[in-house]
Length: 485
Image (cartoon, rainbow, N blue to C red; front, side, top):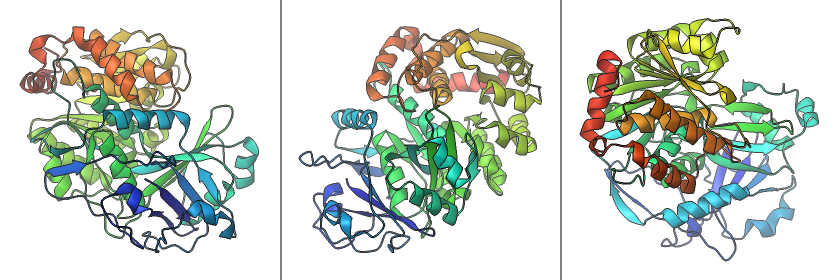
C-alpha cells in the first residue's frame, strides 16, 4: 500500500493509490476507505507489489498542501515520485526503517488470507488512545529553533503540529499505529498466536479514531497484528497523532495532537465489547482527557459485573500527579491489576523519590490485588497482599529501552491468561519478554521472537491450564481474594 501524507497547519490527510491496497478494484480518481463492518465477519488479505518495493509505511510529506482534511482530493493515478519537483515546498520521502521492513516481511510470511469470525468473548480488551506516531531523529539545534524542551511531552494544536512537520522537511521518519497500550496488545497477541498446545489469545482494542485515512491506517496496522479494533470511526473526525523527536543522546521529545482521540465515549461498540471480555486494560493516558473518567468508570463497572478482571496502566508520572484522585477512584473501587514503573508507583503512593520500588509495590498491593512494578535494570516486583516478590532482570544487551514496560505488561497478562499460579514464574516470563524488546531497536515484539518465547514458556504451562475455562477461574480467584490458585 502507498500512502501519501499531506499537511497544512490546519489539516493533515492522506491520499492513496487504491490499486495497491485493493488490487481487485478498478483504479479510480478517488477512493474513501469503508467504515469497519458492523458484522462479526472480517475478511483480510495482504497485498504488496514487490517489483517497485511499494509497501505500507512509504509516506510523502508535502507541507501546506491544499488537500482536504478527509483526504478527498482526487488522486490522478500518476506516480507522485515523478511529480516531486512540482511541489513548491519540497517533498520528504519517508521510508520504513530496516527493522520495520523486517517486521512487515514477517507479517507477510505469517499472514493467512482467511475469513475470521469474531470470538464470543475476548481474552483481553484494551481501552486507550488511538494515535498514529510519526517518529524521527533530530539534533538539539532543531529543538532549540522550535523552542521545544528536550525530553518533555507536550499537547499541541493544529498550527503547532504543522509548524513542526514543516520544519522536518528533509528529515527521514516513519509512521506507525502507536501507543503504549497498543504495544502491549500486539505483543500479547503475538505471544498467544502460536503457543504450543494452547488456544490462541483473542485480543481487541477500543478507542477513538476519525473517518480519515490515518484512522484507516491505524485500524489496518492493528488488524494485521491480530488485534481487532472494534470502535467505529467518528464521522468527519481527525485521528490523533504523536510526533516523536529523538536526539542523539536517546532522549525523546513528544508532541501530541489529540484530534478525535481526545474524545472517548461510552458508546454501543464499547458497551458490547466490555461485557464480553476476560480482562479489560485501561490506559492511564485516558485520565488526561476531559470527562473520560465517566467512560472509564462505566466500562470498569460493566466489565467486572460480567466477570472480567480490570487492569490499569499508570502510563506517566505527570499524568498521575495531575489526576491522582481520579486514579485512586478507579484503583480503589474497580482495579484488580496495576502496571507501573518505579517512579509511577511512587507517585501513586505519594512517596518521595528515596522510597524503594519494592515499598511502593507492597503499599499498592493493600488496595489492588495484583501489582506489577518494573525497576529498570534492577529487575521488577510483583506485589500481592502486602508482600513484594522480587523478579531479577532477564539478561540482555540493551539497545533501546523504550517499550520495555509495555512488553513486561504483556508477559504478565500472558501468564495470567495461561493460568500460571506461581508469581515468580509470571514475573520471569514478563522479564524475558521485556528483555527481548530491550535488546532490539523499536518498541514492538517481533513475531519471530514471540514464537520463540512462547515455545520456551511451554514447559511452565501445566496442561490443565491451557483451557479458557481454567483461565477464567484463575481470573476470578484474583478478583475474589487476591490470590493465584
